[in-house]
Image 1 (spheres, rainbow, N blue to C red):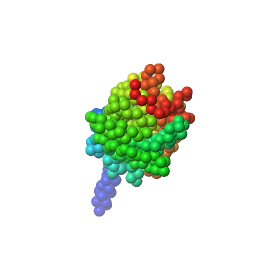
Image 2: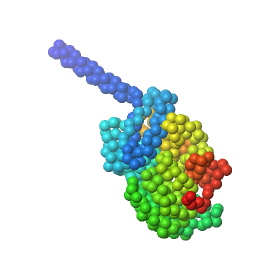
Image 3: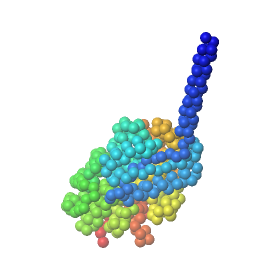
Image 4: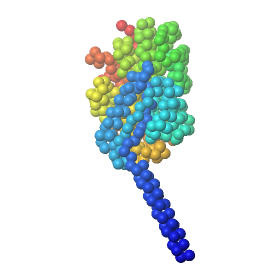
Length: 421
């Protein structure tokens, strides 16, 4: 009986030792899992198709920031883990954006996602991230509804489209008073996706009560081959101001066709996007002179780190940054800040850290003096300025002219539009 008890006791001890052994092995696996060497970030951008030039600039801006962050020691709270960028081409197609979001989350196992430049792609892509409870950080897409769906995992650094529309309306009222040419009528020319449709709602909202009449609303399909019929409608309607929402190929086509038919309102005003694309100047030449555009950043704006970072970007890639590039660049520093505070690659920990962001120092000041998100994930107080395309020493530049406190020294708006040579 005693022998039998000893035998059973021996078995029990062995079982306990095995259990402890397996537990330790499990803990060892956990420790291994905690030893993070890289943080994979998924980036969905239009890297082919008509919007590819902007996608390329956005990729370059992200890469520059990540090079700097990794060179400075990576994410220190994660033992110096390096950020690894995983890019996916949306082709500007919402369905591709959805499938790439799913692939990056389920196969690449990214810690969070960024993108997508186009609002039409961001809307369904962010739905995927929300379903998988993985943070999705939007540097550029501006359609209001992106952060108005009650999602917990979507954050946006860009201003809402209607914020641009609000400031565009304020601008034309200011110009009317300043130059004694009050604006009475406007026309909307816009690409017919979520971005353009959202802009129309914004303009209409902020025109209420101003006495300014909308006399023409003309949507068109993105990547149109001929916009002459729309331009002729504008010429016939003869509005005081033409507001436009376009990606780069359409922005250039509209500008050149307006020049061809010598349409002459008080002002042409773009809504960033294609008008801010570096390709735009190359394809319009002098035709875009005296056009206006709205943005959150210009190379001549007086903010810390702007000149320094833009110089570095220009030396590396051969051309300067635009507002979209600045958003993409500073995005990586906002994410770095969140990763440092999260000290984890767990999506929930990163989401919590992003929601508690309060960044008021460092290179992000080239975009805004403070980066804070409200309960919807929308950045509060994204700054906006108006630039005018002007020749400086014979070369076309975006010159900040409004508001006066942010304007390039010794430069004022030229209003009304000077016409075509």
